[in-house]
Image (tube, rainbow, N blue to C red; front, side, top):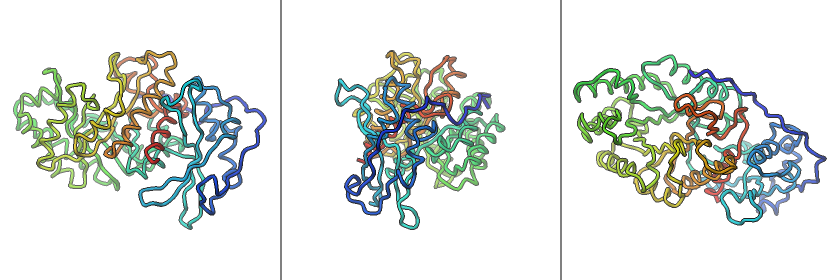
Amino acid sequence: PTETPVPPTETPVPPTETPVPIPTLSPETVGGLEGVPDPHVTNPELFDLQNPAAPIPQFVNAIKMAGIEVTAEQVASAINYQILHDKEGEPFVVATYHLNPDPNQTGETLEGPIPLMIAVKGRENNWIWSRCFSIDLGKPQDIDMSASFDGSGSVELLKRNPLVRSNFNFATIPYSPALEGDLNYRLGGAKEAGFSNYMAHVIEFDYVESKHPRSQDELLEIIREQFEFAAEKFKNTKGKRVFIIWNEIHPPASFFPYYLYANYGGIDLIRESYRMARDILGDNAILLYNETYNYSFREGYYENTKKIVEALKREDLIDGVGMQMHMFQNGYEIEPDPEEMIKVMRSYGIPVYITEFDINQENLRETNKELRQAQIAYKVVYACVKSGVCKMIGFWGVYDGDTWLKYAFNYGDPKPLPFDKNGSPKLFYYAILGALLEGLK
């Protein structure tokens, strides 16, 4: 595992000023729901402006990093309450702050309510207030949230920081059969952190290449061994299992997945691989084809994905399309267009999973990179929730202190993830919450 310093659980913020009066909750402000208690009374810790780990100071810290000057007192005094409903029609309440990045403009990305707290009914039909996490807004829309257990920094952060851990109900486990120790460490860390739902790439193409297959039969035997390895490693998991079978089948010819595809049977090879996956990984396993840049009609990656998906759909061999979403990984990038992404997601005719989401700040041209990154995040998550077919938002990493962009691409300080180097939420994170809320509205 990558050796990465483990971040502290709290980020100091400057002491706040004398609190201003905060309006209390009344039935009228939450749509007439009776019995919803005043969170200032029942959960004063949620309105603690001196604690840097409390919801409002963390939010203020994030927006200040993005150049938006608002005090904790101003946020606390402007909290609004909205009533929403889950998929069973049960009501819940969110406490929001209306973010306005630029008061001189109207209708720009990110302008709108950002949820900070949530009230839901407990087992005894009593209302319970707590801080709002992304999974609280994802679950009512059948959208899972996944965190990647990659380097040791991410693994340890997810194990010991409940404010980060509570945002996710899925664990993405990168691994290679040649490095079983890494898999055991990551999977063990995920189980220790309380995860029961897992996503993993099954065919590791560097491993396949090292075996030098000389025929389709030899290649399929190597693939079969990898399926059996994955089935054994994930056999005791109690929740959902999402497996990425083939990944990135696109030119050039020297690119190894495409080389195998072009030289060992094409679509027939892919079909046979997915048949084996169904047999070995089980009928309950969710099988994906995963690709880069396939969120836009403007690149050939979409056509490649569509062709493979249609061939597998005809035999009921595939359950979803994986969209990597490594945004601005390179200097050139497709600018995300939410309306186009919605159309693309729906066009595949099966569920879509965002599998590897991050946004490289080093390749953003704007001066205010924190704000620009958050705007991109909002667009991607907005497209997911509005498409009606998006089932997961999975991050390739968790926090800026541990990212593949450093060790795989030698970027100096890409800051690509929703939590900063200290494990504190960025505006990126609150953009996710805002977009998820928009889907519920």
